[in-house]
Every structure is written in C-alpha cells, then in structure tokens.
Amino acid sequence: MMSLGTKVRQYREAKRLSQDDLALRLDVTQSTISNIESDKSIPNSMLLKKIADELEVDINDLLNDSVNNIMSNNDFSDHAVAAVNQYNPVFNMQSLELIESILKTRNR
Image 1 (cartoon, rainbow, N blue to C red):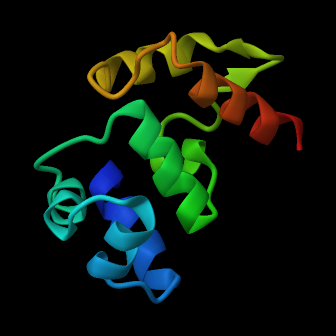
Image 2 (cartoon, rainbow, N blue to C red; image 1 turned 90 degrees about the vertical axis):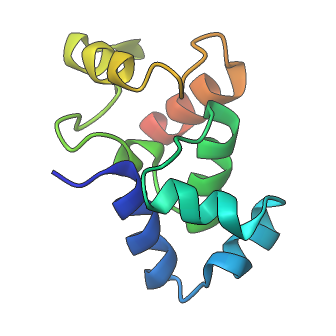
C-alpha cells in the first residue's frame, strides 16, 4: 500500500514538476511539499484538493489504496468512512469545497 506522500511524489514526477514548481503553483513552501511527500505531515482538506487539482488526479487516487471510491451513490460508503477516519486530521467533514469536488468527480 502506498502512502499519500508517495502518491503525491509519483504524480508530481509524472507531470515533470519539481517540488519547487508544485509549491509555487500551490502557494506553499517547497518544505511543505517535501514534508507531505516524506509523510512528515498530512495536508489539510483544502490543500489536498489543490494538490489533486494541480496534479490533475482524483482525490480518491491520493487516498488509501483500500478505498476505491469515497462516494457511492452520492453517499459515503462504510469502508470509505473508516479510511477517511484514518486521515482524521486531513478532513474537516464540513469542508463544502472538498465534498463538492468529490461529488463532481464522482458524477463525471
């Protein structure tokens, strides 16, 4: 199972972006990207959404491998809730933008 940081690094490298490039695009420091990629820190829900958007990947692809999709029939699936709870510091379940992003992605 790949960590969130490993996935961010792989997607960033696939886009041929340096940590500095991604940091500039996200308006964060290079050390923030480094800490995320080395799993020293977990991005909050807003930064996670920005990372997914910038790397042109689905948020689901950045999260736990055991979660195929967070949303099922426009509702959180039981296994997804368990996986999301694992990343509790990441998610503020009141984050309207994150939920809207997941729903938009799900409806594509």
